[in-house]
Length: 292
Image 1: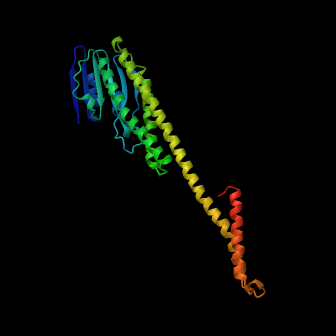
Image 2 (image 1 turned 45 degrees about the vertical axis):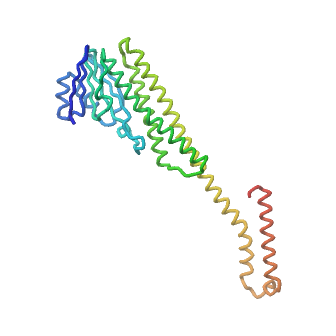
Image 3 (image 1 turned 30 degrees about the vertical axis):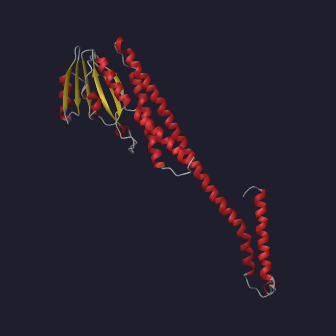
């Protein structure tokens, strides 16, 4: 899809370019007097947020979270899509590959370019809110499975949640740095500060979720190791009971001629009594040592 949409406001023009063809990038750069390489950056997969100030305009790239909540993605370009801004006091040019619902059917009458930019940036930051809530809920559910129901969890799911929260946090940190470099008109300062506060709140949420995911993985591995130790302990206890019994059976199973106990009338009963007594002594010793 290659679409160029122009919207005239009272004091400026907004030009929205969606998924331009590669063979038109140079034409777009010449037509709107933009740097060709910055346009290439705006369409490069996985490009991180950035801000550059040029003589005639400012250039900025931001990313919005666009992946489904349950998607098993673990890279920046899979989880998010970007919008590039070229702006000055008379014009705002946005370039992006993906379609964004919040860019369609905008009815607000903006008085200056900064109001439009803050509107778009605010909606881009808002896309991180639902994934943060989703991952936080999933981590809480996994903790309940481990501690309350003693059930197994999917380490694969936890891995992707950890990776996605880590990437989202890094994107928000870089975005925060970019937003701090923006200068706006006095009437837009409060709105921009509101965006900054929202970013800070999301960073704290993602940081907490990422830490919970790390702790959950460590806890799960510790519980799994403890269960394995319990199994080994049980096998060791059984071995402790059967080892002396096996020794007795092995000794009297050799059938040498000069073994008087084999011809003893009460030899079988005696051996059973000895083995039972040994099991009793082992049991008492384990109890005293609190092994059982």
